[in-house]
Amino acid sequence: MEVDDGGGGRWDFLDWVGPDTSSCIFQLFDDPADLARAAAVSRSWRRFVIDQEFCKTLCRRICPEVANFTRAVVVTRSPPTAERASESSRDTEFRTRERDHVVYSYLGGALVSAKPAMDCILHCIGASSTDYFPEETIDNTLEPRDRVNHRPSYWSSGGHEDPDAPESLTYRLSSDLCMIDEVRVQPFEAFFQTDNPIYASKAVRIRLGHSKLPPGEESFVTDENENRKAIADENYVWTYTSPEFPMLPENVLQTFKLPRPALCIGGVVKIELLGRIQKQASDHKYYICVCHAQVIGRSLSPEFMVDISDPADYSILKYLPGASNLRMEDIINSDAKDSTEWHSLVARYRQMRHVAMVNMLLGPVQFMDGDDDAGGVTDDDMYM
Image (cartoon, rainbow, N blue to C red):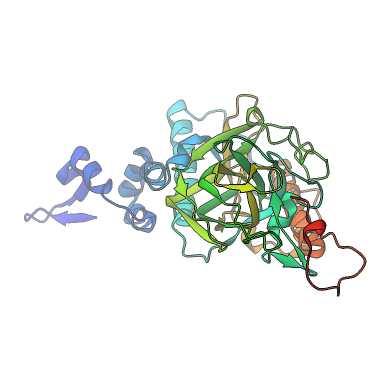
């Protein structure tokens, strides 16, 4: 923007107020769209916004987890052109900042998007313990009802004499990058036991992060130990941990809203269930039971994905312009002319879509005896 100096000359606003004051003004912007508009005013304004990395700074202010990204890249379908040998180091540095500006400008828009939130759970990874597998598997928590085919549907922890013993449920999300708003958990009411006890926990805590396990080792729940090896804390990097939320001993879907939307980098959520309040009369041990869980948020894919394959757990943010316009044939088929990076990320997106379709078709596995119409459930049918 230029201003008239009163004598017929024109001055750029940035030169008029100086770089320090200009920086203070630009740092007051709290909407990524405002920064994008400012960068479009003139070449000097665009250069200033890029050099000062305002878009990256604003993204980190909106969502501190963004600081975990060590690098940002733009992935296009066509192979990248070779860097010019005659380019100076100063020009190369500016091109890097210009690339970051583009990536973080679009990321900022995605972070504050008004896109409707939904349940982001793709499938279960495992539970810290299970009383009777597979009848009381964590997979049952994907079912929104507490009774299916006249039988109860819930996950149950193992019994414990210590009321402070924690438990956890770990889930894989539908995308490697998700903005999470809240988590919902419904404790199970054992309607088949005397006085209908509710096996709630004392509190809930949420962790977001990524797995360090090689692909394939963190798969569907199939083992009798509910993938206990796969959910061990040493196999994960947690980039966000919520405060503790008290849980009510009520058989309702309870909402635990995060203090602010948090970015899950890596697509893994652990719901920690802290403390026990209910003893089972038959063995005088404490249990925690959950019939349903949801992780509410928004996926940032396919426009954004993350690469955490680096041995030092560096997270590389990858922006795929135009990926939201992918047609089904683009996902199914590949073109030999496409770049290697594009092939890799589309393959990852294809894998996530396939798992989602399998989950949708199969749903949680339910265990029934031969007569669904018997009606009613006796204590002998239960495993807790």
